[in-house]
Length: 102
Image (cartoon, rainbow, N blue to C red; front, top):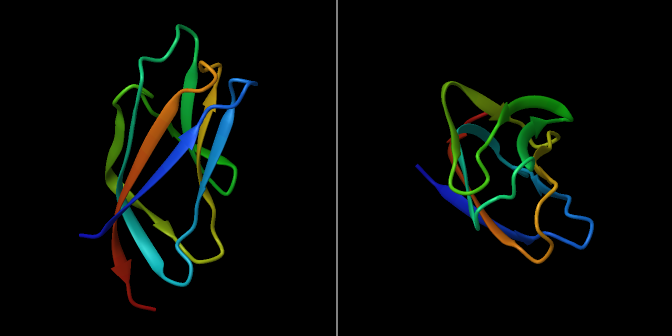
């Protein structure tokens, strides 16, 4: 099962959106994990596909996994969105997926 890692730094606003696209492949995503410093009280981390909420994720070491897997076609955009986080905080996102045939 392949995986890809992405990193992002929270800007001064405390909010950040990390975009994940599978181009040119079709992925069946089985897990998205987030790792970073402890999140401040009241902060959020959300996983969305094409702007539609999928699930919350604990930003300081949480993961979204389980059935059903999320299919990500080349035209789709999955986002990990942080709100209310400490500016300058580094986050790493790991996406685990299977490459599907068309």
